[in-house]
Image (tube, rainbow, N blue to C red; front, side, top):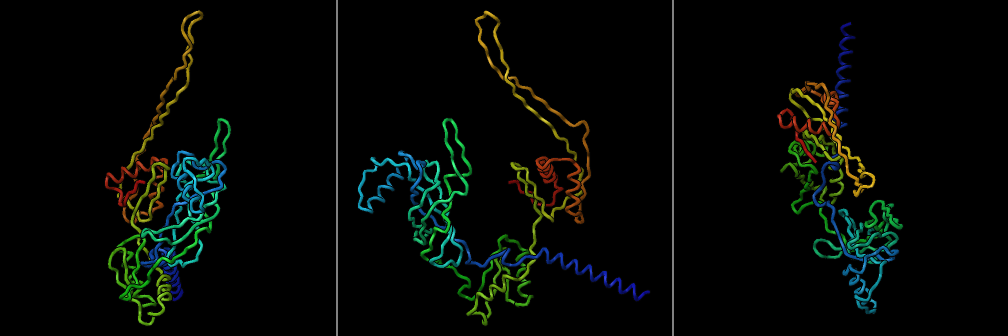
Length: 376
């Protein structure tokens, strides 16, 4: 019997360790999902161009830069016109923007965003003319051209009525950007270091990254220099194969540390509570107020054969309701309290998400909330 009991205990212990390991793996993330190699960054381009072919929804005559741009364009085709004599409604001046991923080579096709600069009412059905896109250094890195897609946006006009869906003055040029020059990007520094930048800088996470890289199968020479930077020395055997080594680094599993944080958005009533949020033992009383203001038009008519006139005036009524009983509920606190217990206790107050925001703000002011409160 003792032998069977010992086997059963060992089996239970092994099962518990297995579940614990599964929970750790479930919370772990690949290095590439929480950090990136320095140099592999997105680059932004922008340019100024014209959209033609609009059905009378382009810029009006008082948008002088559109007319001047059109006149300059016609001069390139040996057509000289006076900008003051130009009367067109099917042309709109736009700004074209695009994001170029790191290591994108010349000749690649990308999407571009487009937005009206003037008083055009819609870009539907328009075509963007050849537009050079420049970087912050003033050099041209790509050109964009093609039909404009609005993603379902439109504007319908009728006598005394107007219906607009989405944003008809902005859209996309799908596959219309051709990259003419590759943007320089580096993976390894001149001294043979791979610099890893954390997306969310954190001391604990940076330390865990350095330990995982050093103690894992790669046995990398890693060092956490700051909460947002970890350096790894590129081995001599991978001097000519940095891509393979960085790919191996990106696949390493890391257990990131998440700070205790409560994020609230009063405009939308959204409340997000992090897993590590804790509170000290505290009692909370909540009583909501119901306030209603109503305006109803009233008509005052003069007596028959009087010289008065009929007057319409607003009749305002104010109604306030307050619950007869108030509950004083003790919220559980301490390091061992689970998030589910905290949420269950807060739900027992019967508060709405917007009232819950006021509760968290009061908990923060009282010092009972052991977390960062972020109000959006």
